[in-house]
Amino acid sequence: MQSGLILTSGTVRGDVDLALRAEAAGFDSVFTIEFFNRHGYVPLGAIAQATGRIRFGTGIANAFTRSPLLHASAAMDLDEISGGRMVLGLGSGTRRMNQDWFGVPFSEPAARMRELVTLLRQAIASQRGGGFRFDGQFWKLNVPIYSRPGAPRAEIPIWVAAVNRGMIAAAGAVADALVGHPIATRRWHREVTLPGLRRAEERAGREVGACKLAPYVVTSISDDRDQAIQDAKGQIGFYLTTELYHSVLALHDMREVGQACRKALRTFDVAAMAAAVPDTLVEEIAIACTPDEVHDRLAQWEDLTDEPLFYAPAVGVEPERLHANLDAILDLFGSSSG
Image: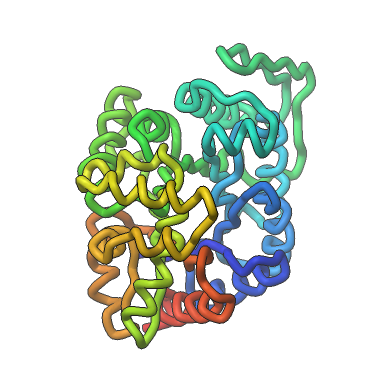
């Protein structure tokens, strides 16, 4: 099994340091996050220069808040300076993220994502010379002279973040991997994500397994098991304030958990969000345990993925606990950990 790390130090310099430590620990990949105050691409330039082996990527970049050719050019630049180690991870985000945070319209996200990935593949493949034209439903581009010397690859892996069925189908049709949302349970991946990917691959005429699952796995480790579980609850509760993700709760007959988290959001009561999350849900979503239990907990994911993306919770967690969890992830999940 390969291992990936989500970079959540809170600073660009901290994330570069984490990437270096992850490479030394034998991790296979590292990924940046993007938010209204965090850029997905910029830190990767420093990471590309500082590291020499590890794959890296956006995990994820907001798909619809940039022109497609800005995504393509950023990915190609980063692939060039790293010698071919870039992974382009894209996600639609929610309506609130697009409209309220970035001031862009939001409609038909699954269809738009499918077209965007198709466009990006063509743009990246066209970089070796000639013109580039695209006539789609959402984008119409015409670049008469389109060439970009120095690119090491004509193809860059494109990963798509998805939770619900429409975006799962889009990922299965066009992406190299589906980035599983931190709120998705193992049961959701087993009963919804993976079957949806296989159906979409078949409809698109792709090989079975063409789109792998690379799930975020909320990971908190402590000698005090209760502390590890509590660390995970704040992050999970925060994500459950978004109604879009409540389809996962419906599968587990836990809609009331989402309702309680949304109520707590009115006053941004993170403690109340965490209190609403039952231990049984943490068990399905996270690796929240003692160091001695890590092997058995990781084994629960082995039939779902060959590259989990370990994600230290940050919401409702004191800085020292965030860094302790990152340290534990690096110590316990890299190939050099034994």
